[in-house]
Length: 332
Image (cartoon, rainbow, N blue to C red; front, side):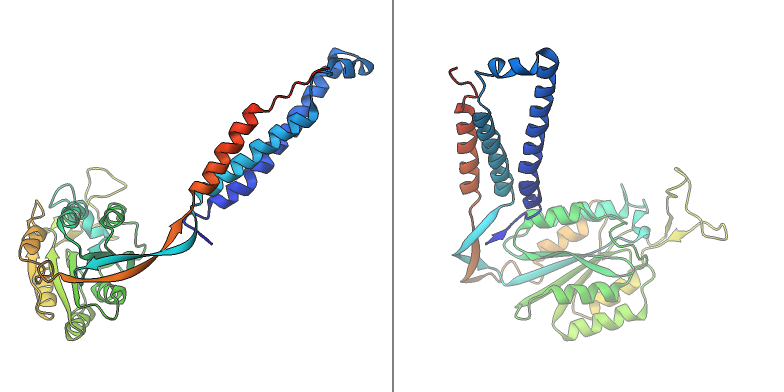
């Protein structure tokens, strides 16, 4: 047995204990109030119509129903089923620069936000290709593994910001390595779309791009920003430009020359993103190396666990119904 959301199991264990503790406390407070209302010898006659045993049964039923409800939320799974799944054979990894230079506003609302909008548009228009997301700055991180579930890809893209990678910089070599590691060893086509302003690229990036090209990885580069350069907004002083430790205004520029070289080393192309994401759209229309036209008509069997949440959910509803039917009154 496995669980899709195992964190709810803690609540499944804690909820019954909490409910029983509340019931015990409530019973103690009720007896204390009754003791102030009447003398102790009169209490049995006052409580003749109340059944402690039935109250205990109601509390136990309520506690068990809550435990089962949280168990259902934990998404229990047991057993497997085989599903036939087709695929294009194309794997596309999109690496997005999340360094602070991507906060520049030479494209609106910012380089990073414009890049995210363009990626979301691209994902919406892709067919059956699997897509993965890599975030990179001074290092790289696989934000979303390769998956045909484009809704999961969208969520990963929407979560990108400049705090995703604490180490600042623009380490393209790390982004390429992380993307290559995301591909399965038997991938028929491996395409990396690198979206960055290209600033602070080192020779390591060009060397790693050449190695990737030799390994059969095609890299398309998308440049974000203005080659003429612009200032960065200061997060601590709204409306002011960011300055370095010497008080000089920091200027960030799109490095098109290096990005073109990275693409050339792998047989890919360079495109500026543009103010409306036209670069990615033109790349898609050109077929992303004809990935969408090279659909593999064969199918493969995928073994998936069977969801069983409806069993504890049905039991919980049954116990709640039974709890409502139990009467705490008895005939004296």
